[in-house]
Image (cartoon, rainbow, N blue to C red; front, top):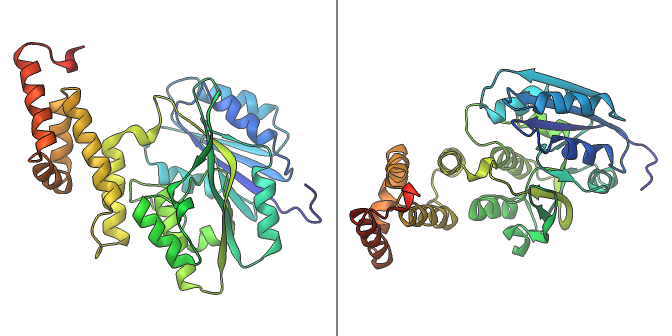
Length: 320
């Protein structure tokens, strides 16, 4: 893909304990068909060999790079903001180093942005899923919002609310000026990508002269493995609660959120992990109130009864 003028794009990578995958993630940046890139990696105090892997890979980088090493903060949005302060690009994209970009990912989106100066980001809802070895296990994933008829920023914001996520930010390309205009990520909140997207969508509503591109192409591969951050249920619930109260205080919680909670409740009971469940319920009255209602349903009462029987007979699954 040829460009008459190729503005710099900064690839922002925030990583933690990705030693097994960081080499593949960085190589996917090296292999991009768009060649005017800089790479900024921030390691949040990894306890494995991530730092040494990143240093070795960046030594062979075909692009300028910066590696930021720090003690662990656990503040993902803050880490993104720290990395962003070093970005010089007209455009910005993001990659968690356990995931990978497909070769035309950046080029295809920058072409769209160069064709229309009013577009502040170019994104797609498609994605692949790969396993820990890099094998593709789902070549045609689509975010649920791909089924929506979205014509404007208000529709995009509503889809974000309904589905609790419009698209992954990895590999999507944003104008750096737009990310600056909304203040980047919010370091006071738990969530990262969901907060940035919501701020950008609201910015678009406030600036009707600006637009966006949302397609359904697949330019990014998400790796499913045991350490994925989204699998940490309490963090996920806290993220949604903070996000909803900050941006949608007058709306009820999305149905999707309650489905997540109910799946979590059922899984805890199925595995006889009642201590974990009680910790979650103590975390927020939102969780406790919904559990109080849901535990009265026939299906949940039956599951709780079976769990009590297993515990009485010494067959608790939590001990296995």
